[in-house]
Length: 303
Image (cartoon, rainbow, N blue to C red; front, side, top):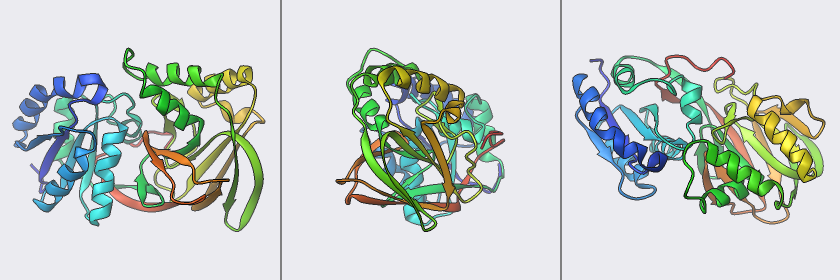
């Protein structure tokens, strides 16, 4: 075993109970590598407090078993602690976009245990909006409506729930006005369906929203999808699952170290699937270059 001290944080509710079903194998496989500290959440958001306690206890690698929300909450605990704690993502949630980026989305438990206890010093960028850090992206508009729809959908599991909720909102969602500023240049206010400021390529479990985004270039990709009629939205949504939506004239992309986005009122926004209300009508989003140490056997080629 390397010099890393490893703690596993499991969200039993992830993936509609998949996290709980994984616990026996997690204990067995990590135990084979000398890791015996497996801590489970008992309520939404518990992972932040568990991560803070694990950092205080001297653990240097935290393995997160859950979805993007759980993983991002642990990353926020690491960033706020100012610790050089390493993060590993074991997919168990509805969306597992960050595990795709790190190359661990298809790894089995035994492989993850070996990777987590082995040496590595790979680092990736982290985004920040207001006082919230994000791994994949932050979004405004349509995706917020989709997450609110998901919260009321209990009969679907897996990434298909994102597509279902998106299709439901395609017909009823009303767009929003926003202006975007970067590097001193101001883009005139436009009526948007969706604005995503991406650190990585993937979004919502099924979409390649920023196909050219990199988690190691110190920059963010702002992807604007202007508001269009419902029938056109279907075409754009389908293209986004393949990463080909940027060919459409209604899609615009900009790359910069930071963005200032201004709305008529403080907006709702999401980071890695977690909803927030902005404190002000103008929101600052910035890249924190190579700020997080991760377990990443291969960073995905598009990232």
